[in-house]
Image 1: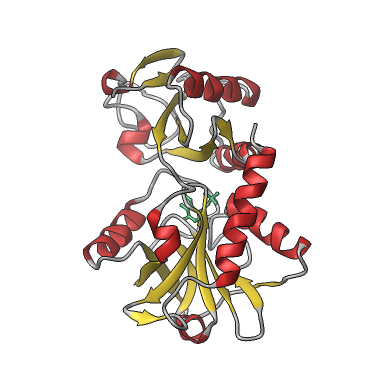
Image 2: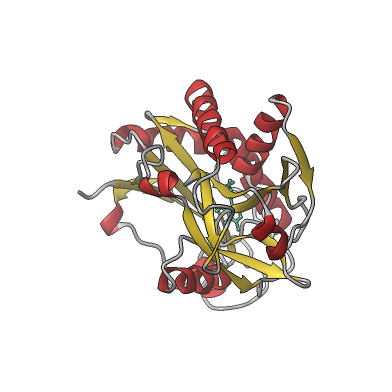
Length: 286
Ligand code: PLP
């Protein structure tokens, strides 16, 4: 069934939604995006996602064409028009369409704002029960990964390689086997000493909103968390591994490059953190 999208002030059928071929998002990947989950018709951790949107556009000097309050209204209007219960709301802002293809910022061009929804039953995903395998690939991205840029070619290639290998995610590695993050998720392990480890925020990774919430929820429950890089060798010696993202919440990782993590079954801490995150989501959705 076709759904309703928002493009530059208009609500239109997603299949008919259009922007110019001169849009700088299309020509230069000169844009930023955000994805918020929807559970029971409510947006999950949305203020955190919109704060990251504001930060990302600020980092590339791209003015938002609407206020954050208006963007929130549009998110809710799309959820309501599409009668969305469980899924995702996607937001993309680009530097708009100029009359040609000059690299420098155009003057007097209004940024493009486009939003749409998709249906996804994140809570009941089968892969949350079985766990997923990940493959490792070199992290070939630029050095400002803290900006949620639409330039996602490295992640497209990484996740395609994962799909071809029958894996659910690609973990990107650099500096002698250190994991930066997943193609579209943050990476965690639980060490033999029961310490949760996830890489510290820096320009080397995207500051995951789900990562932030899970770290807080874990610490509130007296779990020890260390924010530092870990290697694939350490992950293979760990008790558990998992990923977090708005589109998967918490997902156990049971295999890395074909090798089992512990006994190859989803770990109890990952499964418990998933439940805790879902409780948090249901309690705080807006
Ligand atoms: N890291 C990368 C590279 C991502 O693309 C994403 C989500 O798209 C994440 C981490 C997870 O971020 P969040 O939890 O905010 O969805």
